[in-house]
Length: 137
Image: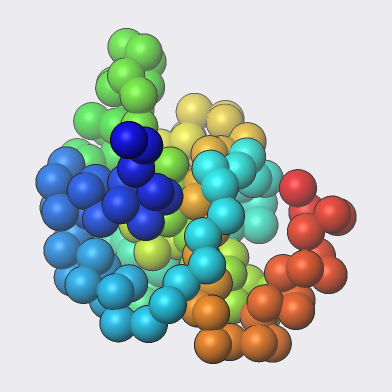
């Protein structure tokens, strides 16, 4: 029996992804998942990092250490879970994968594997996704 995208996300977040808070949050409301998709990096917004404008600020030293580790893993052929991206009214915000996106950017990787989710009750975002999909993907 194959797993659903939602089951894969939950397994990753509660395991290697070490982000049970997001895993719990995703279960609060029904989500619509798309992917994995290949997205252009320039459309993705980080929300975590040491920069002052980040929603979730992290220690610069820890951030750099994690990004360097991901870069090493990519260089050595390691597989990484797709970024988890929330699409809301035209914006693609990374909810899990901020360190991975930074590592990809430093390595010049512009096409990024991601799973995009939309909150099912957000009709405006669902309509915007449908209108934008052909031009973006």
